[in-house]
Image (cartoon, rainbow, N blue to C red; front, top):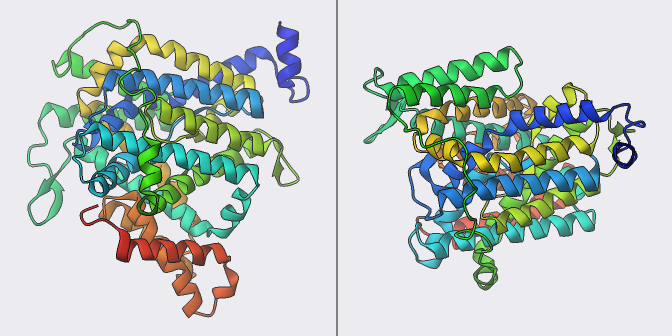
Length: 457
């Protein structure tokens, strides 16, 4: 059996072995397993103060299964040591922007089942579009068409947005009438103390390069919350909850009936997944020595794994499933093949049996709030890749950077930059330096913002 595994995953060629790959897979899991706590809480709306109407327990099960399937696909099809799960950024995009927009377009309440079912249908369609782009190799065209500055701004803007949510959930800032966010009046409350304990713990673990630092910080904050009575002990191990309340509930028919109104949302969902996947594949692939002559072998298989995982994730009730940059932690300990991804997927399946812990943690937002702030800080690193000296690059990028948090919408923040970019380039004599896809996308989004965008959506 070991020889068969070794040959399939090319251990000898990539100078690795089964024990090293197993350790790498566990390391990847610990680094990205915080999503098990955050994803269900975000999808139900708890993290952002709304009620999407989705079932928490079913979403926990769906998170683990969708992540496991994504990891298995990546391991088997592409043979890359990369873990997949519902992505940070894509989940907020779905809950903060897509679901409210769908509610307005359909004339229904945010918490109704019809709304989140259509939103999942949009995720499915975006995954299908990703597959088509991969099959015809059009994804490269789109990747080269979009400015590196705009790509960097998207990640950084989402980082700021996620940080704001984290500070709000940690009761560090609050909304004041007419002035927006202000510092919380009482910083002595237990929720604030727990937030800072978690934040200091996670930051310290990251500084010390301890694998799984985000997860360990959440655990520490949860233990403190338990000791002071903020959460209750309801056990550790139990059978997984049924996915029935969310499984295969996506509504594609309604999406197709309202396709004109939904096109901008589909575009944004698809592009966000492409950017995330491409950035992670290049970053982790280079680190793992899989980049040859500037190209990644099996890149198409990796993209296919990602897009199929998104399709399956939407069936499980979740936002876009994508590659995780945290996979680099597994590469650091020697992971070089897809067997590491397989091991990561197995641990996600094992995590199914710890739902009582996840449910208890998700009930008290200051426990997971520090993780949002740290993840936000990690995403902000991309801001240094913006070409700040070229105003035709930096101003549209800056519109995205500040537009995402200030409009409280990832999609609309992105649209501001995508619309401004080709206009500025054209008026400054640099119009020929950018691809025609920039003009097409800018025109579509401008028409949407001016004439199609639903009021209040």
